[in-house]
Length: 116
Image (tube, rainbow, N blue to C red):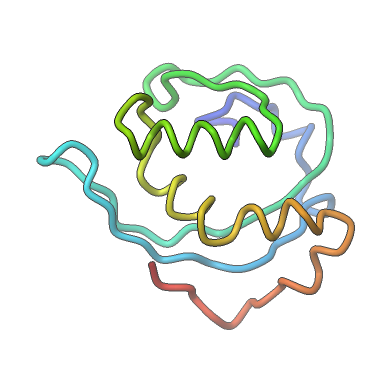
């Protein structure tokens, strides 16, 4: 979190995170480059200092659920650029998790790797 988002390690201790699951995905980015990795899905609800590395993150913002849905629609229409892995995860999982922030344990699955 510190390397990409610039969040100091002291603000994100592992014991305050909820580890849900793992997601394996492959996604083309620009026709030449793409991504192929396994991501660990961690949740934490907390105010933290964010200072993103510009080599990793072009821009960031806080949004409501409806604003995010609109952003994803705009990305599908090529009006907005969103990294492919985020769109895949958001459309498949994120809104379920968002609706259940007070009960995330129901989604914990440390054995399965979700393939996308």
